[in-house]
Length: 161
Length: 122
Image 1 (tube, rainbow over the protein chains, first blue to last red):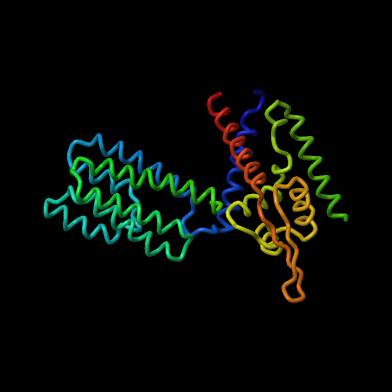
Image 2 (spheres, each protein chain N blue to C red):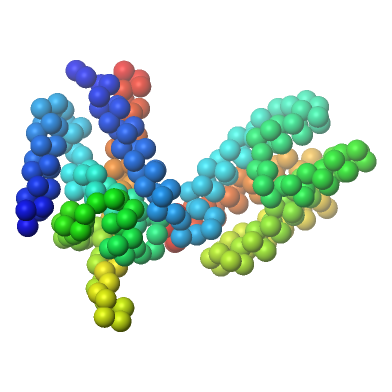
């Protein structure tokens, strides 16, 4: 190619323009669909990273580090309590349940599918709490990764972003 | 109508620029959506169920004439739909993105992504 730079820069500039316009135009849904797809993808990556950590401290740090913190503020407090009590295996279930609860209540002001997603999170959370501890990490992947991607796509398709 | 002429002229210049650079990639580009105001309209409608003429005008910081010309081009291509109504005595124009329009935006995004990837590898 003779002059790849200008084309490259123009493409980047166009993408930036689209993003800025979309941001300024605001979203119809309170929880943007494509945003959730992105969150879900990071969660899946986090699960793979977390699975490779040897110690539970590192596992904990990986999940917190690549976090979805806003709905986890309350969960954070419980995390400290449970972890100190040596109940780290109860953490995935607690997180999933709290996250799901946030969607059920917060989603009341959004499109109907958002609380439905919250309920799904709560089911996964319950499974994590009462199932074998070894499932915890993969249920986190299914919940934070899988559910986000699936519902994100549904929301993006149906409600337009 | 003078503004309409100006919009056409700007487009012709853009066309010229592109053909000068050449390459088959530029030829595939969706001209209709590539223009800034039209790209703005489609992007804004992609994240909103519907937007009024005045909302779009404020968002894209453009003039009445410019916006209506570009909106009509998109309407002709069936990328957007336009519904006119009255709110009391004030006429109101609401725009919506069609499925075809959304696909066009997706194609355009893919196209830009491909351009960036191609130059990154090269």
